[in-house]
Amino acid sequence: MEIIIINGPNLNLLGRREPSVYGQASFEAYFETLKAAFPEVNLHYFQSNHEGALIDKLHEVGFSYDGIILNAGAYTHTSVALHDAIRGITTAVVEVHISNTFAREDFRHHSYISPVAKGIIVGFGMESYKLAIQSLISD
Image 1 (cartoon, one colour):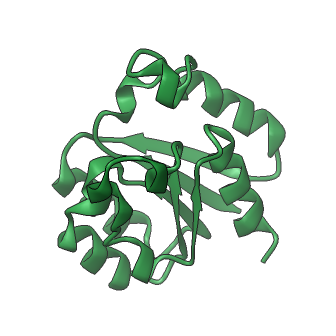
Image 2 (cartoon, rainbow, N blue to C red):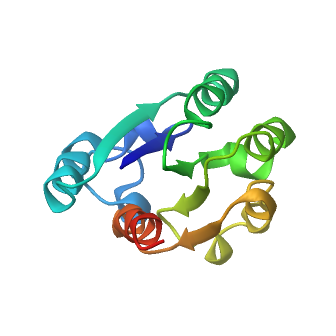
């Protein structure tokens, strides 16, 4: 089984950026934990601060991988282009957010990703990614 985790803007700063909201672990460190927890899954990871690079990656893997976990960061709330890219591929996408976006600023309450995602996991910290993997492998 091939699953990719795609993280959007500013998520390269995990572990350093607002630790009270996002925790103190880097994503790279947590990714190693995920790989150890799911040895039967071929996990991949991609991060970009650029919307076009995220779209290109969705197009690249969106017809061949078994699942995509997408934390689009702030693009969640602004990107019709990501919405369209997800709508155009066949691989299931699970939308993930580390923080509870509904407990934050009002502009974070709307997602352009949600209507085209298989499901949404918000507010469980880094464990949100683990829950997303579990949802994809249980199908």
